Image (cartoon, rainbow, N blue to C red):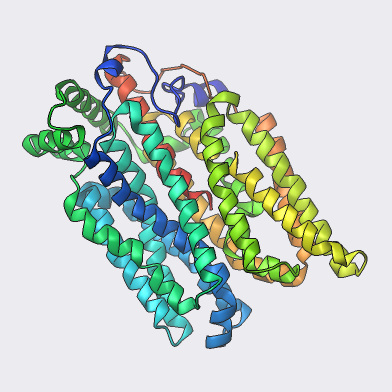
Amino acid sequence: MEGDGIEEGLESATSPLLLGDKSTGSTTTSNQHSITPVLVFSTFVALCGSFSYGCSVGYSSPAESGIMKDLGLSVAAYSVFGSIVTIGGMVGAILSGKMADLIGRRGTMWTCQIICMAGWLAIAFAKKAWCLDIGRFLVGVAIGILTYVVPVYISEITPKNLRGRFTSANQLLVCCGFAVTYFVGSIASWRALSLIATIPSIVQIVCLFFVPESPRWLAKLGHEKEFEASLQRLRGTNSDVSEEAVDIRDAIEILKQTSAETRTLELFQRRYAYAVIVGVGLILLQTFGGNSAVSYYLGTIFAKANVSTSSGPIIFALLQIPTSVATVLLMDLFGRRTLLMVSATTSCLCLFLVGLSFCFQESHNLKELTPILTLVGILGFGCGFAIGMSGIPWVIMAEIFPVNVKASAGSLVVLTSWASSWVVTYTFNFMLEWSSAGTFFIFSGMCALTILFVWKLVPETEGKNIRRNTININHSDPWTKLGDSENIEMVFSLTTLFY
C-alpha cells in the first residue's frame, strides 16, 4: 500500500521545483526564454496580492491592544476577530479554482482586491465588533483566493527556465508584507494601518488593466488568437514562441484527458491512504506546531514576556525574509526529509525554551531571564520553522499525489490547513490565560511528534523519478511538461499558507 500510494504521485520529481526546471531534452532547450519588461511588470502586479496576504496575517498582532481599548473588546471577542480571517480563507479556498477558471486569472485577482479593499475599509471605520468581523472575514475570503490564483498566474506566464525563481518570489512578498505591517503597526494606529493595507490592493486593481491574461488559461478556452498574442507579448516581439505554444497545447490536451477520468471519491481509495495520511498529517502537525498562533499574536506573546512589542515583532518578521530565501536554495541540496527533521527539531527546542521562560516567570524564579529567553526562543522558532515546516509539507503533498486526484487532494489539504488554523488562532488567547508555559510546551510536544512522524512515515521525494499513474496515457515529453507545471502550480499556490 505504501509503495502504490507514493509511487503514483512522484512525477518528474528530479527537476528542482524551486530553482527552475533543469530537465534535459529539446523541449527545455527550446523554451530558454529571457526576462522581458512585460514579464517582470506582470509578475510585480500579481505579487501585490501576495503582499496583501502578508499584511492580513501581520495585522492582528500590532492592532490588538488598540482595537481592544478603543472598542472595548473582550479576549473572546478579539479572538473571534483574529481567527475569522481563516473562516474567510476556507470560503476563498473553495471558490478559488472554479473562479480562476471561470473569469480568468486577471479577473479573479481584480475581484479579490475589490473584496479585500472593502474588508479593510470596514475595519478602518468600524464602530462595533460585528463590523470588524465582517471586514476581517471579507479580507479572509480575498486572501483565500489570492493564495491560489497569484502563484498559478505567475507560473503560467513565466517560461520553464525562469518559473521556479519567479514563483519563489511569492513567499518572499508574503514575508515582506508581514514585516512591513509589523513595522508600520508599531508607529500607526490600527485604523490608519487598515487604510495603509489598502495600498497594494489599489496598485493591483489599477495595474491589472495593463498586464496580459494567462496564455495557458486562454489556450484552455480555445481562444487561439488571444493566446498567441498574450504569449508573444510576454516573451518579446522578437522571440520565437511556436514550440512553447505547442508544448502548452499538448499539456492542456493531457490535462483534459486526465480530468475526464478524475473522481473526487478516488482520493479515499485504499491505494491512496498512505499519501493522504502523509499529506494531511504534515499539514495538521504544521498548524498545531504553533506557527499560526505566533504569527497572529506575536505582540501578545512579547507583551506577556515583557519583551518590546515594537522592536521584537519587527526583528521576527525581518528574519523570515532571508530564511525563506535560504529555504529555496537548500531544499534540493539536502532533500525534503532532512530539512523537515532539522526544522521540526529546531522548532521543538525553541518552543520548549519559550515554555521554560514562562515557567520561570510563573514561579518567580529567575523571572528576569524570561524576556531574553522568550525573544531567543521565538526568533529561533521563526527561523527554524521557515527552513522546513513552513513550505516543504506543501512541496511533498504536490509530489506524492498523482495528477488524477491532485485537485481533490489539494482541496482537502487546503481546507484542513484553514480549519486547523482557525482552531489554533481562536483558542490561543484562552490557552495563554490558562497557562503560558503549558501552551508552549504543548506546541513543543507537537513539534516533537512531527519529528517522529517524518522519521517513520514521510518519504524522501527529492531525486525520485517514478512516472506511473492511474490513467493510461503516453509518458512522453508532454506528460513530463504537465507533471512539472502541475507540481509547480500546486507547490506555490499552497506554500503561501505557511502562516
